[in-house]
Length: 400
Ligand SMILES: Nc1nc2c(ncn2[C@@H]2O[C@H](COP(=O)(O)OP(=O)(O)O)[C@@H](O)[C@H]2O)c(=O)[nH]1
Ligand SMILES: [Mg+2]
Image (cartoon, rainbow, N blue to C red; front, side, top):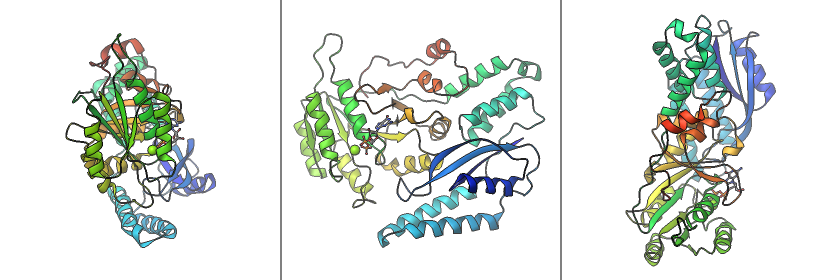
Protein backbone atom coordinates (compact mmCIF):
# COMPACT_ATOMS: atom_id res chain seq x y z
CA UNK A 1 0.00 0.00 0.00
CA UNK A 2 1.28 3.47 -0.85
CA UNK A 3 -0.03 6.79 0.33
CA UNK A 4 -0.39 10.10 -1.44
CA UNK A 5 -1.18 13.68 -0.55
CA UNK A 6 -2.42 15.89 -3.37
CA UNK A 7 -3.31 19.56 -3.40
CA UNK A 8 -5.55 21.28 -5.91
CA UNK A 9 -7.76 24.30 -6.34
CA UNK A 10 -11.00 22.34 -5.99
CA UNK A 11 -12.29 18.88 -5.07
CA UNK A 12 -13.04 18.16 -8.70
CA UNK A 13 -9.53 19.13 -9.78
CA UNK A 14 -8.03 17.03 -6.96
CA UNK A 15 -10.06 14.00 -7.99
CA UNK A 16 -9.13 14.19 -11.63
CA UNK A 17 -5.48 14.74 -10.68
CA UNK A 18 -5.57 11.63 -8.47
CA UNK A 19 -7.33 9.51 -11.11
CA UNK A 20 -4.84 10.47 -13.79
CA UNK A 21 -1.83 9.97 -11.51
CA UNK A 22 -2.81 6.84 -9.58
CA UNK A 23 -5.64 5.32 -11.60
CA UNK A 24 -8.99 3.92 -10.45
CA UNK A 25 -7.44 1.94 -7.59
CA UNK A 26 -6.77 5.14 -5.66
CA UNK A 27 -8.85 5.50 -2.50
CA UNK A 28 -9.40 8.88 -0.86
CA UNK A 29 -9.18 8.84 2.96
CA UNK A 30 -9.88 12.45 3.85
CA UNK A 31 -9.71 15.97 2.52
CA UNK A 32 -9.47 19.41 4.06
CA UNK A 33 -9.51 23.02 3.00
CA UNK A 34 -6.10 24.67 2.91
CA UNK A 35 -4.45 27.90 1.82
CA UNK A 36 -2.08 27.20 -1.04
CA UNK A 37 0.73 29.09 -2.71
CA UNK A 38 1.62 32.55 -1.51
CA UNK A 39 4.25 33.72 0.87
CA UNK A 40 3.70 34.17 4.61
CA UNK A 41 0.03 34.71 3.99
CA UNK A 42 0.31 36.90 0.90
CA UNK A 43 -1.24 35.81 -2.40
CA UNK A 44 -2.66 32.65 -0.89
CA UNK A 45 -5.61 30.87 -2.49
CA UNK A 46 -8.10 28.53 -0.97
CA UNK A 47 -7.66 24.95 -2.10
CA UNK A 48 -8.07 21.38 -0.97
CA UNK A 49 -5.61 18.78 0.27
CA UNK A 50 -6.59 15.18 -0.27
CA UNK A 51 -4.92 12.20 1.42
CA UNK A 52 -5.42 8.64 0.24
CA UNK A 53 -3.77 5.43 -0.81
CA UNK A 54 -3.63 2.85 -3.55
CA UNK A 55 -2.81 -0.79 -3.18
CA UNK A 56 -1.14 -1.53 -6.53
CA UNK A 57 1.50 0.07 -8.64
CA UNK A 58 0.39 3.53 -9.73
CA UNK A 59 -0.90 3.61 -13.27
CA UNK A 60 1.68 6.28 -13.99
CA UNK A 61 5.25 6.58 -12.68
CA UNK A 62 6.23 9.24 -10.14
CA UNK A 63 6.49 12.72 -11.58
CA UNK A 64 9.62 12.92 -13.70
CA UNK A 65 11.87 15.89 -14.22
CA UNK A 66 9.76 17.23 -17.11
CA UNK A 67 6.65 17.10 -14.95
CA UNK A 68 8.46 18.88 -12.09
CA UNK A 69 9.46 21.66 -14.46
CA UNK A 70 5.92 21.91 -15.76
CA UNK A 71 4.66 22.24 -12.17
CA UNK A 72 7.18 24.96 -11.43
CA UNK A 73 6.20 26.82 -14.60
CA UNK A 74 2.55 26.55 -13.70
CA UNK A 75 3.17 27.83 -10.15
CA UNK A 76 5.28 30.66 -11.56
CA UNK A 77 2.50 31.73 -13.95
CA UNK A 78 -0.09 31.68 -11.18
CA UNK A 79 2.03 33.70 -8.78
CA UNK A 80 3.15 36.21 -11.40
CA UNK A 81 -0.50 36.70 -12.30
CA UNK A 82 -1.12 38.08 -8.84
CA UNK A 83 2.00 40.23 -8.52
CA UNK A 84 1.06 43.85 -8.13
CA UNK A 85 4.34 45.75 -8.04
CA UNK A 86 8.04 45.41 -8.85
CA UNK A 87 8.83 45.45 -5.14
CA UNK A 88 7.34 42.02 -4.73
CA UNK A 89 9.28 40.40 -7.57
CA UNK A 90 12.23 39.62 -5.28
CA UNK A 91 9.95 37.94 -2.84
CA UNK A 92 8.23 35.94 -5.58
CA UNK A 93 11.55 34.73 -6.97
CA UNK A 94 12.60 33.62 -3.49
CA UNK A 95 9.33 31.76 -3.14
CA UNK A 96 9.94 30.02 -6.48
CA UNK A 97 13.41 29.04 -5.38
CA UNK A 98 11.94 27.50 -2.22
CA UNK A 99 9.33 25.58 -4.24
CA UNK A 100 12.04 24.31 -6.54
CA UNK A 101 14.27 23.25 -3.64
CA UNK A 102 11.35 21.39 -2.11
CA UNK A 103 10.53 19.56 -5.33
CA UNK A 104 14.15 18.61 -5.78
CA UNK A 105 14.37 17.02 -2.36
CA UNK A 106 13.97 13.25 -2.50
CA UNK A 107 10.57 12.42 -1.05
CA UNK A 108 11.12 10.00 1.82
CA UNK A 109 9.28 6.76 1.33
CA UNK A 110 6.39 5.89 3.61
CA UNK A 111 7.65 2.57 4.70
CA UNK A 112 4.89 0.16 5.76
CA UNK A 113 3.90 -1.94 2.76
CA UNK A 114 0.97 -4.24 2.08
CA UNK A 115 3.08 -7.31 2.93
CA UNK A 116 4.00 -5.82 6.31
CA UNK A 117 2.56 -6.86 9.63
CA UNK A 118 -0.96 -5.40 9.98
CA UNK A 119 0.04 -3.63 13.19
CA UNK A 120 2.73 -1.68 11.33
CA UNK A 121 0.26 -0.79 8.58
CA UNK A 122 -2.24 0.30 11.23
CA UNK A 123 0.33 2.48 13.07
CA UNK A 124 1.22 4.09 9.78
CA UNK A 125 -2.45 4.82 9.12
CA UNK A 126 -2.81 6.43 12.54
CA UNK A 127 0.21 8.66 11.94
CA UNK A 128 -1.00 9.56 8.50
CA UNK A 129 -4.46 10.32 9.81
CA UNK A 130 -2.91 12.81 12.25
CA UNK A 131 -0.98 14.36 9.37
CA UNK A 132 2.54 13.67 10.53
CA UNK A 133 5.01 14.32 7.72
CA UNK A 134 6.19 11.42 5.50
CA UNK A 135 9.74 11.53 6.86
CA UNK A 136 8.50 11.52 10.47
CA UNK A 137 6.24 8.55 9.71
CA UNK A 138 9.05 6.69 7.95
CA UNK A 139 11.28 7.25 10.99
CA UNK A 140 8.67 5.89 13.39
CA UNK A 141 7.82 2.86 11.26
CA UNK A 142 11.49 2.03 10.86
CA UNK A 143 11.90 2.25 14.61
CA UNK A 144 8.87 0.04 15.26
CA UNK A 145 10.06 -2.49 12.71
CA UNK A 146 13.45 -2.85 14.33
CA UNK A 147 12.18 -2.57 17.90
CA UNK A 148 9.48 -5.27 17.77
CA UNK A 149 9.69 -8.90 16.70
CA UNK A 150 6.88 -10.32 14.54
CA UNK A 151 5.50 -12.00 17.63
CA UNK A 152 5.55 -8.79 19.65
CA UNK A 153 3.79 -6.94 16.86
CA UNK A 154 0.74 -9.12 17.56
CA UNK A 155 0.16 -7.06 20.71
CA UNK A 156 -0.98 -3.93 18.91
CA UNK A 157 -1.96 -2.09 22.12
CA UNK A 158 1.59 -2.39 23.37
CA UNK A 159 2.97 -1.23 20.01
CA UNK A 160 0.60 1.75 20.03
CA UNK A 161 1.61 2.68 23.59
CA UNK A 162 5.27 2.58 22.52
CA UNK A 163 4.54 4.68 19.46
CA UNK A 164 2.79 7.32 21.60
CA UNK A 165 5.80 7.37 23.92
CA UNK A 166 8.19 7.84 21.01
CA UNK A 167 6.04 10.68 19.69
CA UNK A 168 6.16 12.18 23.19
CA UNK A 169 9.96 12.00 23.10
CA UNK A 170 10.02 14.08 19.93
CA UNK A 171 8.16 16.98 21.57
CA UNK A 172 10.45 19.50 23.24
CA UNK A 173 9.10 21.80 25.92
CA UNK A 174 10.78 25.16 26.51
CA UNK A 175 12.01 25.66 30.05
CA UNK A 176 11.62 29.30 31.06
CA UNK A 177 14.69 31.09 32.31
CA UNK A 178 14.64 34.34 34.27
CA UNK A 179 16.90 37.08 32.94
CA UNK A 180 15.34 40.03 34.74
CA UNK A 181 13.79 41.77 36.40
CA UNK A 182 12.50 42.94 34.17
CA UNK A 183 12.10 39.81 32.08
CA UNK A 184 11.56 41.09 28.56
CA UNK A 185 9.40 38.74 26.51
CA UNK A 186 9.18 39.57 22.79
CA UNK A 187 6.64 37.84 20.54
CA UNK A 188 7.25 37.74 16.79
CA UNK A 189 5.44 35.92 13.99
CA UNK A 190 3.37 36.34 10.84
CA UNK A 191 0.38 38.67 10.81
CA UNK A 192 -2.85 37.24 12.11
CA UNK A 193 -1.42 34.26 14.03
CA UNK A 194 -2.63 35.79 17.30
CA UNK A 195 0.41 37.64 18.69
CA UNK A 196 -1.49 40.59 20.14
CA UNK A 197 -4.17 38.37 21.66
CA UNK A 198 -1.48 36.09 23.11
CA UNK A 199 0.42 39.06 24.59
CA UNK A 200 -2.79 40.16 26.30
CA UNK A 201 -3.34 36.64 27.65
CA UNK A 202 0.27 36.38 28.87
CA UNK A 203 0.12 39.81 30.51
CA UNK A 204 -3.08 38.83 32.31
CA UNK A 205 -1.62 35.49 33.38
CA UNK A 206 1.57 37.06 34.72
CA UNK A 207 -0.19 40.02 36.35
CA UNK A 208 -1.99 37.84 38.84
CA UNK A 209 -0.60 37.64 42.36
CA UNK A 210 0.66 34.24 43.35
CA UNK A 211 1.20 32.54 46.71
CA UNK A 212 0.07 35.62 48.58
CA UNK A 213 2.85 37.72 47.01
CA UNK A 214 2.04 41.10 45.47
CA UNK A 215 1.12 40.90 41.80
CA UNK A 216 4.14 41.27 39.56
CA UNK A 217 4.43 44.60 37.76
CA UNK A 218 3.62 43.91 34.14
CA UNK A 219 4.12 46.35 31.24
CA UNK A 220 3.41 46.07 27.53
CA UNK A 221 5.27 47.69 24.66
CA UNK A 222 3.86 47.47 21.16
CA UNK A 223 5.57 48.16 17.88
CA UNK A 224 2.46 47.18 16.00
CA UNK A 225 1.51 50.64 14.86
CA UNK A 226 1.41 50.02 11.12
CA UNK A 227 -2.02 48.48 11.04
CA UNK A 228 -4.96 50.75 11.66
CA UNK A 229 -6.59 49.74 14.90
CA UNK A 230 -3.76 47.47 16.00
CA UNK A 231 -2.53 49.89 18.64
CA UNK A 232 -6.06 50.41 19.99
CA UNK A 233 -6.48 46.63 20.22
CA UNK A 234 -3.62 46.20 22.72
CA UNK A 235 -4.38 49.49 24.50
CA UNK A 236 -7.93 48.33 25.14
CA UNK A 237 -6.62 45.12 26.71
CA UNK A 238 -4.15 47.20 28.75
CA UNK A 239 -6.95 49.46 30.03
CA UNK A 240 -9.13 46.53 31.04
CA UNK A 241 -6.27 44.81 32.87
CA UNK A 242 -4.85 48.05 34.26
CA UNK A 243 -1.49 47.38 32.60
CA UNK A 244 0.43 50.32 31.11
CA UNK A 245 0.93 50.05 27.32
CA UNK A 246 3.56 52.04 25.44
CA UNK A 247 3.88 52.32 21.68
CA UNK A 248 7.27 52.68 19.96
CA UNK A 249 8.29 52.80 16.32
CA UNK A 250 12.07 53.01 16.30
CA UNK A 251 15.05 51.34 17.95
CA UNK A 252 15.83 54.56 19.79
CA UNK A 253 12.32 54.81 21.23
CA UNK A 254 12.46 51.15 22.21
CA UNK A 255 15.70 51.67 24.17
CA UNK A 256 14.13 54.63 25.98
CA UNK A 257 10.93 52.78 26.75
CA UNK A 258 12.66 49.66 28.08
CA UNK A 259 14.74 51.93 30.34
CA UNK A 260 11.56 53.61 31.60
CA UNK A 261 10.13 50.19 32.45
CA UNK A 262 13.13 49.07 34.55
CA UNK A 263 10.90 48.99 37.64
CA UNK A 264 8.70 46.27 36.09
CA UNK A 265 8.93 42.53 36.72
CA UNK A 266 7.90 41.52 33.21
CA UNK A 267 7.70 43.52 29.98
CA UNK A 268 5.83 41.99 27.05
CA UNK A 269 6.67 43.27 23.59
CA UNK A 270 4.10 42.88 20.82
CA UNK A 271 5.45 43.20 17.29
CA UNK A 272 4.31 43.59 13.71
CA UNK A 273 4.21 40.55 11.45
CA UNK A 274 4.59 42.45 8.26
CA UNK A 275 2.60 45.18 6.66
CA UNK A 276 2.10 46.01 2.99
CA UNK A 277 4.32 49.04 3.47
CA UNK A 278 6.97 47.25 5.48
CA UNK A 279 6.83 43.95 3.69
CA UNK A 280 10.45 42.99 3.39
CA UNK A 281 11.59 44.91 6.42
CA UNK A 282 11.60 42.15 8.97
CA UNK A 283 15.26 43.13 9.27
CA UNK A 284 14.28 46.64 10.25
CA UNK A 285 11.96 45.31 12.91
CA UNK A 286 14.76 43.09 14.14
CA UNK A 287 16.73 46.25 14.90
CA UNK A 288 13.88 47.53 17.05
CA UNK A 289 13.66 44.15 18.77
CA UNK A 290 17.40 44.13 19.45
CA UNK A 291 17.00 47.50 21.12
CA UNK A 292 15.10 45.65 23.88
CA UNK A 293 18.53 44.65 25.19
CA UNK A 294 20.60 41.49 25.50
CA UNK A 295 18.42 39.98 28.21
CA UNK A 296 15.28 40.07 26.07
CA UNK A 297 13.94 36.68 25.02
CA UNK A 298 12.23 36.37 21.68
CA UNK A 299 9.51 33.79 21.05
CA UNK A 300 7.82 32.89 17.76
CA UNK A 301 4.08 32.44 17.35
CA UNK A 302 2.86 30.00 14.71
CA UNK A 303 -0.68 28.89 14.02
CA UNK A 304 -1.48 25.18 14.42
CA UNK A 305 -3.33 25.37 11.10
CA UNK A 306 -0.23 26.26 9.05
CA UNK A 307 0.66 23.74 6.36
CA UNK A 308 4.01 22.01 6.44
CA UNK A 309 5.90 23.98 3.79
CA UNK A 310 4.75 27.30 5.29
CA UNK A 311 5.87 26.16 8.74
CA UNK A 312 9.39 25.55 7.43
CA UNK A 313 9.29 28.93 5.70
CA UNK A 314 8.14 30.84 8.80
CA UNK A 315 10.76 29.16 11.02
CA UNK A 316 13.41 30.14 8.49
CA UNK A 317 12.16 33.72 7.99
CA UNK A 318 12.24 34.50 11.69
CA UNK A 319 15.53 32.69 12.40
CA UNK A 320 17.46 36.02 12.52
CA UNK A 321 15.45 36.99 15.63
CA UNK A 322 17.06 34.12 17.54
CA UNK A 323 13.75 32.97 19.00
CA UNK A 324 13.93 30.70 22.05
CA UNK A 325 10.62 28.95 21.78
CA UNK A 326 7.48 28.47 19.77
CA UNK A 327 4.00 29.46 20.87
CA UNK A 328 1.46 27.35 19.00
CA UNK A 329 -1.78 29.30 18.51
CA UNK A 330 -5.26 28.35 17.31
CA UNK A 331 -5.15 24.74 18.46
CA UNK A 332 -8.94 25.00 18.54
CA UNK A 333 -9.03 25.42 14.78
CA UNK A 334 -7.59 22.04 13.82
CA UNK A 335 -7.74 18.46 15.03
CA UNK A 336 -4.57 17.33 13.30
CA UNK A 337 -1.26 18.76 14.39
CA UNK A 338 1.06 15.91 13.41
CA UNK A 339 2.75 18.17 10.88
CA UNK A 340 3.47 20.81 13.56
CA UNK A 341 5.00 18.17 15.84
CA UNK A 342 6.99 16.74 12.89
CA UNK A 343 8.41 20.08 11.75
CA UNK A 344 9.28 21.34 15.25
CA UNK A 345 11.00 18.00 15.90
CA UNK A 346 12.88 18.22 12.61
CA UNK A 347 14.04 21.76 13.45
CA UNK A 348 14.55 20.97 17.17
CA UNK A 349 12.36 23.86 18.35
CA UNK A 350 10.88 23.77 21.85
CA UNK A 351 7.30 24.85 22.58
CA UNK A 352 6.46 27.19 25.47
CA UNK A 353 2.74 28.02 25.31
CA UNK A 354 -0.41 26.86 23.56
CA UNK A 355 -3.51 28.91 22.77
CA UNK A 356 -6.85 27.43 21.87
CA UNK A 357 -9.35 30.22 21.41
CA UNK A 358 -9.99 33.94 21.23
CA UNK A 359 -10.94 34.45 24.85
CA UNK A 360 -8.54 36.57 26.93
CA UNK A 361 -7.12 35.40 29.26
CA UNK A 362 -8.64 31.90 29.43
CA UNK A 363 -7.42 30.34 26.19
CA UNK A 364 -3.72 30.13 27.04
CA UNK A 365 -1.73 27.45 28.80
CA UNK A 366 1.84 26.37 29.35
CA UNK A 367 2.73 23.72 26.79
CA UNK A 368 2.97 20.17 28.06
CA UNK A 369 3.74 16.95 26.24
CA UNK A 370 0.53 15.48 27.60
CA UNK A 371 -1.69 18.28 26.28
CA UNK A 372 -0.12 18.01 22.82
CA UNK A 373 -0.52 14.24 22.72
CA UNK A 374 -4.17 14.55 23.69
CA UNK A 375 -4.83 16.51 20.51
CA UNK A 376 -3.91 13.40 18.49
CA UNK A 377 -6.87 11.57 17.07
CA UNK A 378 -7.47 7.85 17.54
CA UNK A 379 -4.18 7.29 19.34
CA UNK A 380 -4.71 6.09 22.87
CA UNK A 381 -2.76 8.15 25.38
CA UNK A 382 -2.15 6.80 28.88
CA UNK A 383 -2.38 10.21 30.55
CA UNK A 384 -0.99 9.22 33.93
CA UNK A 385 2.03 7.51 32.43
CA UNK A 386 2.79 10.37 30.03
CA UNK A 387 2.24 13.04 32.72
CA UNK A 388 4.68 11.23 35.01
CA UNK A 389 7.29 10.56 32.37
CA UNK A 390 7.17 13.99 30.72
CA UNK A 391 6.33 16.46 33.52
CA UNK A 392 7.79 19.93 32.97
CA UNK A 393 10.70 20.16 35.42
CA UNK A 394 9.96 23.87 35.98
CA UNK A 395 6.23 23.55 36.51
CA UNK A 396 5.05 26.31 38.75
CA UNK A 397 7.61 28.80 37.43
CA UNK A 398 5.66 31.63 35.97
CA UNK A 399 8.04 33.36 33.64
CA UNK A 400 8.82 32.60 30.06
N1 LIG B 1 -9.56 30.48 17.07
C1 LIG B 1 -8.58 31.20 17.59
N2 LIG B 1 -8.42 32.48 17.22
C2 LIG B 1 -7.42 33.19 17.76
C3 LIG B 1 -6.52 32.64 18.69
N3 LIG B 1 -5.62 33.60 19.03
C4 LIG B 1 -5.96 34.71 18.34
N4 LIG B 1 -7.05 34.47 17.57
C5 LIG B 1 -7.75 35.39 16.67
O1 LIG B 1 -6.95 35.61 15.52
C6 LIG B 1 -7.16 36.93 15.02
C7 LIG B 1 -5.82 37.66 14.90
O2 LIG B 1 -5.29 37.83 16.20
P1 LIG B 1 -4.22 38.97 16.55
O3 LIG B 1 -3.85 38.77 17.98
O4 LIG B 1 -4.69 40.31 16.15
O5 LIG B 1 -3.03 38.50 15.59
P2 LIG B 1 -1.64 39.25 15.27
O6 LIG B 1 -1.81 39.89 13.94
O7 LIG B 1 -0.63 38.15 15.22
O8 LIG B 1 -1.39 40.23 16.38
C8 LIG B 1 -8.12 37.60 15.99
O9 LIG B 1 -9.41 37.51 15.48
C9 LIG B 1 -7.98 36.77 17.25
O10 LIG B 1 -9.13 36.82 18.05
C10 LIG B 1 -6.69 31.25 19.07
O11 LIG B 1 -5.95 30.67 19.87
N5 LIG B 1 -7.73 30.59 18.48
MG1 LIG C 1 -1.05 42.26 16.34
